[in-house]
Every structure is written in C-alpha cells, then in structure tokens.
Image (tube, rainbow, N blue to C red):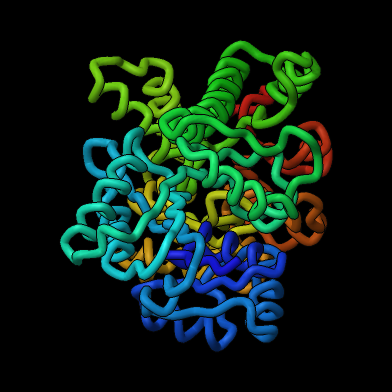
Length: 446
C-alpha cells in the first residue's frame, strides 16, 4: 500500500517507519523544511530505541520518503494518516487547529479515493469534523466526484518503547462506520497481529473516547499510588510492599503502580485535562479525573518539600546534583517533566545545580535559559555528584539503578540522596553510610 503520514513527530515517524518495515511505501510529510532535510540526511529528531535503524534501512531501500510537499505524499495514496500535534489550550481543551489545517490541505490535494485516518489524540466528534472539512474543500475545488472515508485509529505508544509497542501491539482500535474501510485497515495491520482479538472495531466516537479513557485510567493508578505513598510517609509503611500486595490481585494487576515524583510527557497531562474539559463542555464534572490532575501537580513538589525540610528554603551556597531530566527513561522528552518543577524550584531557592541525563541534555537547555550561570550540564553521572551537598534522582534510567556507591561517597561533599523514583533499598543505603530519603517508604524528612 502507498501511505501518506502528515506530521513527523513521535507518532508519525514511528508509525511511518514501522509501516515501511512491513513492505508498504510511505511518504512522511511535514511543513518543517529543516526537519525534512535532516531526516533525508539520516538525522532523526527524537530519541527512540530502534527507530533510527528502521528509518535508515527503509529509506535506503526506497520504501520510506520525506517531503514538505503534501501533493507528492498524497498522490495515488490509499491511506493518509493525520499525526500532527494537539497541544493543550489554556482551558484544558485540545488545540485542533493543526488537525483541521491538515484536513483542508488533504481536500485540496486529493486526486482519487482516499481513506483519511486520524491518529492524533482528538476531542470527541473531531473525526466527523475532519470529514466535513475535507468535503467542503472538495466542493470548493469542484472535486465532488472524488470519494473518501474517515476512520479514527488511536495510537497507544509508550515513549521509550514506541517501536516495540507498534510492532507487537496489545490492541489496535479502529473507529469506523464503513465496512470497506475496516477491511482495508485490517489488511494494513495484519502483519502486526500476533494473537486473536488484537483488532478492535467500534464506532468512531467510542474510539475517540477510548484513547482518553485509557490514559486517564493509567494516570489515575499513578496518582493513587502517589497518594498512598504520602500516607505511608505520615503513618509508616512501605509503598513498595503495598504495591506488591495489591498488584498480585488479578482484578488490579501490577502495571502503573509505582510511586514517584509524578507523571509527565506529551500524553497523560494533556489527555487528562482534555477529558476534564470534554465533561465540562457537556455539563458533567469529571471529579475523578480532576482529582488525578490535582494530585499529580502536587506530587511534582514532593521532593522539593523534602529538600526544604532538610536544608531550609535558602539554598544559597548549596550545590546539588541532578540525575535525570526527561519525564521518563529511554526518551529525551521534557514535556511536563517533573524535573522542570523540581529544578525551577531549586534554582529559585538559590541552589547551584550539576545535572546529567543520558539523552535529554540539549532538550533541557531550552527550558532553563533564564539561569545560565546556575546550571552545569555534565557528560557523566559521576561528574554530576562531584562535591555536591545532595543528589536528587528524578528519572529512572537503568544506569542509575546500581551505581558505584563507594565512588559516590568519595565524590560527594555529603552522602545525601533524595530519590524520586525509589531506586534503592533504604536499609542498604543507611548501612552504606548514606543519608537517604525516598517516597512512601518510611524515610521521609521528619
């Protein structure tokens, strides 16, 4: 099949590259000429495990192409996927302007039958509006003879494992009102189906809601465990033991039950807010979703409050090391990352920071431009602890899990760790001579 992808962000690049890997011919279209030039030169703008190799292979074999010209991408294509951004507005709703711009341009460039699949996360009813926009453009261009169908096909990709998630999905949701469209979508995804029942067919609005419901449910589990962790720090108990105790209940399961410094990224914060906004637009208060959002915003300050209790609110003269900047491991994504709140708070209190992240260093620099003299970016995790009064661990990169503690003791001014991801055993750390604080494991600063 010939496929056109509009947008070359996480979703567009991963989706396009994986479709090409299965033998399809894919044209990835983006308005950013610099990004397209870089992709043609083999420079991938995001860090995602396995993605660069797939792009290089399929580009060299002539199945994956990059262009700024939608007419080239859409000519003779059977499927066109919209994978542009839907950033949050001030009122919590999703900004759909890029979606509708893409729809208008599709209508203007179409030259034959086309299936238009929206893959970006969108508000309920957006896919039908996409249909209306394309139809209007066809009429305006005297191309009413051309036919097309629309489908909503949400992505369920986790940053850091997006390629694996696409290649081996636990479910593929297809929202459509047309049997012919469904059959073509089945054919497209068949190489990725590894077990019966993977492809789920439903109406368009149910598919649109499914994406928001899934992300809000997962965010709820995270915020719930963070609240349990806070209670443990008040009354005693270990949230890690509680996680195991409830996770072995088959009705609950073990996924997304880890306490920490809060969730971030491009999906959970935005989608929870849009879920709340959708309810409000329709006269329904989404009280659980609102509580999830509020709890997560508080959680991002949890480590900051620990540090204040230990050092006071004036950190002038204090040097603090930071391990981890990205919102999660295996990505360079800084959007809504807890590190943004934590680092800004420490800088405002006067601290000098030495920071390290395996992938997010350059991305992080965009967020801290007002403090050029207060942040030192270093090239290794051990450099980040040189002569520091404390280390703050924010992102759970694997290389942070078993560091050389003896070397850390020698390098640090004070053997003091604030662990926002509960990476270490509290008793073991105390036995090694560290002053160690984490979340919900009965080692909070009293």
